[in-house]
Length: 128
Image (cartoon, rainbow, N blue to C red):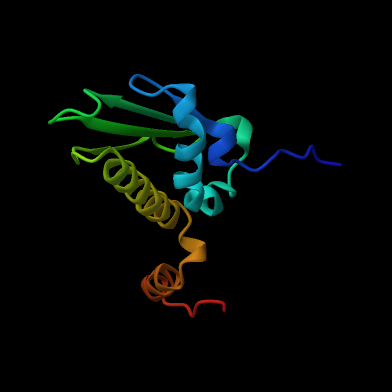
């Protein structure tokens, strides 16, 4: 019998760094909940999101979101948007895109295009 690990969610894995307080946590988790579906593929105990902002609410603020998943390369997304909500949406959307890209690169068996090109190189037909 295998041990059950909980799926990662933003609510479980998000650590707020510089520039954010615990009062910000609820609305940030709500805003980032759209990436829960992508994070669910990973165990919560080996997944961490770190969000910070430098120079909050002033011209030139910089929002940084780091995603650390055991066995995966570290993913860092940043935004220089002046509006904080826009900057959070920017880093969230970039993280979602980069998670999808990294997953596709690491798991070509799940990508039909990559399976077919690999089978053509070997001179065999792909298994559907």
